[in-house]
Image (tube, rainbow, N blue to C red):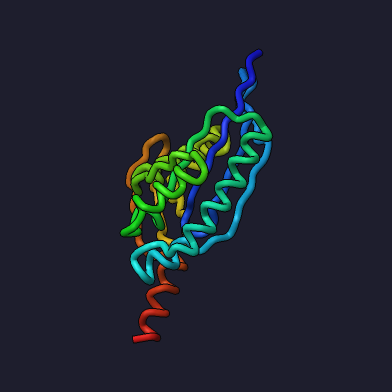
Length: 180
């Protein structure tokens, strides 16, 4: 039985994280999961870009993630960034810094890709998921940058919607209002 190690890294709005997984013919087993609190999106929404200080902190966190990957002998990984990086004017510069300092290639995923990934995560619990959607279901994910909703009936995904009203986005708008 071949066992493969895989890491999933997310440069999310408020809380970058990494998970190390063992993949075999028995399925996927979570080995380790690490998170670090960084308000990456606070700069994006207040200044339109990610500051040098937050970029430096993100790189240091990702360097630790890569050390953990080496410890578990991870060969394959997927690293992605979401809203904070997607909306930052300097995202390409930050992604270059990450690549140079950590060796990681981070991909910015679209809002649609982000919704699809979260939908797949919910649907991966097939037994529970199939039972829940029999009567029609709304799945709502309220994050720091936006709220995403999916509407399902039986086996059909009827609609999805993204609303830019996450808590950190709201706080940044409020602080701009106070300082005006």
